[in-house]
Amino acid sequence: MKKIISDDTLKENRIPPNQKSVKKLPVLHYGPVPEFDESTWSLEICGVVKRSKTFSYQDILAMEKSEVFCDIHCVTTWSKLDTTWKGILVQDLMKQFEVLSTAKYVIIHAEFGFTTNMPIKDFLDSDVLLATELDGEQLSPKHGYPLRLVVPKLYFWKSAKWIRKIEFATENHRGFWERNGYHDHGDPWSEERQWK
Image (cartoon, rainbow, N blue to C red):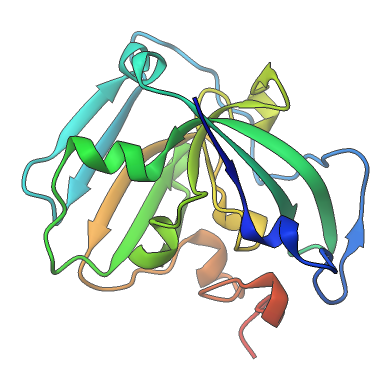
């Protein structure tokens, strides 16, 4: 199993500007926690790809797993250091389908129609993971079970819970929080919290 150490954990000062360290991972989300039904759950890969693909929950469980050790930073000013996530590295997932060269952005679709967006280069970072476990335990429903995106280098709202579709796009399409005032990119070290 691959073990990835996120670059941010190697910094002398690991807390971005105007953040405070917390011991316990807070639970924040808008709306209810979805109920999981394995018989109907799937993860779709679509958009500007050579061929769309759909994975079942059993497909996800059968994929090679890796661990990512990282810090996470929430736009609401908390940071949780030393987290370990287990799941499928995005770079490994990408070996199973072909993205066309015109793809510049990724739109992540979650339950209840929620979305978030990012440049494809952020999505393809070596420490970006589709997580099934957190700190040695299966993800709890409130933390995104059965599958959560983890993008350590961006504010934590970009790490969408309960993901169902990964769409590759030629143009940027702001997600739910981005349309409601949050910054389009979300770099904690530059304090990209909200549109000015």
